[in-house]
Length: 113
Length: 117
View (cartoon, one colour):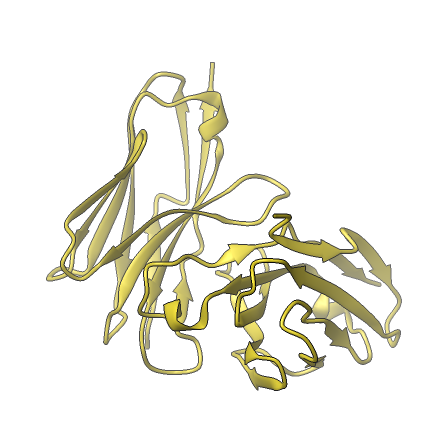
């Protein structure tokens, strides 16, 4: 069964620190992997989309990595800010099946001053 | 551009009542979809549409109907609300050719929080 698993479930860090969120998937065949940020009470907003051939992609202080061989991705946040407090959702895309986008359950990040 | 607009933001229904969740987008996207988000679960696809007049079922379609008479609008109807439909509902849109292979993201609305008592 196609699955996307994220870890940790939740994370607390101090402002200014770095952190890394993990995403493991069993989706096959694979089209691309997406990271979304979801603020409380809002809809998800896209951070990055990575295809099979891309190993690293950055969006400001957010850097996503992808290892298609091990089916793992990470999202690294540098110099965290209070506004980074949100849920981060990993989504894997497959060209087959009704549910072409398989969503992880997210990592809830809280940044404290 | 307003993006994807959902109304209402909050709704409380009694079991057995019906209602329509509204979704509109102004980006001329062919693809529109409805998801529900429940605690501890990933977003799950309810119904989707790849263009006006075309709809199809997702993972959890039971108890919901959709129609797509225009490119801009994609309403979701709850026929007879049940407590199991208490959830947060998100509408999303994209260019069809970008789902799933492309590099264009899904654009989400800010959700409708539905409680069924």
